[in-house]
Image 1: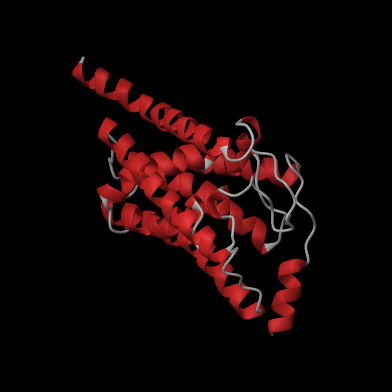
Image 2: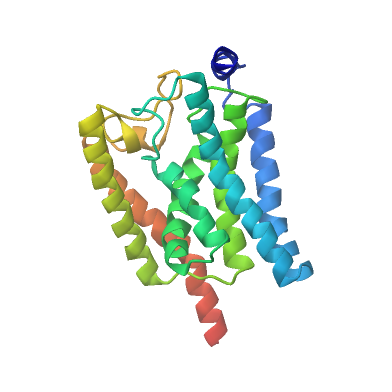
Length: 247
């Protein structure tokens, strides 16, 4: 079994940036993000809404956990590569606290992490495997599913971030940054892309926003300001919503 799983994980058709499967994933995700929360809010009972939200949350979390299990079965699990010390992986593990437990504290943080940091990998995915390989599905559940979950929580659960939430998300991100630095030093890894710019499963460079932020280590500092700008942009719709309610 170990050999067959290991062979499966390393055998796939290559992912093509903005190829048919990439475009299809974006279209399906846009449809779900726009219509599923609206349908759930208007047509489903509160119990049904919570059931759908829970399924979304657990599916997103499972996208990471199943991957780790497969790597363990294959004997290819590597502490330098597969720990949840990338922001998206940690967010995947935490999202059930929002979707199942309805934790507002974690919603405040994950809303900005998800809607800001998840969008860039959707446009320039750091994956090597194309459709229909597991890694293809894992990536899209982890990223598109995360965005869907947060929009769902906002529309259906009536959760709303505040300006204070922006600073909480920034503080949480920088605490995570410190943890990632320590992990990288201890393991000789490159979690959170602190020691180098993104690469895929084959170790090949993947185009990303970091390419425009200068060389190492300056792109890390520049990324702080970009993240803050993203967080503020993600908060703008709520400024208009609150102003409209006052008027």
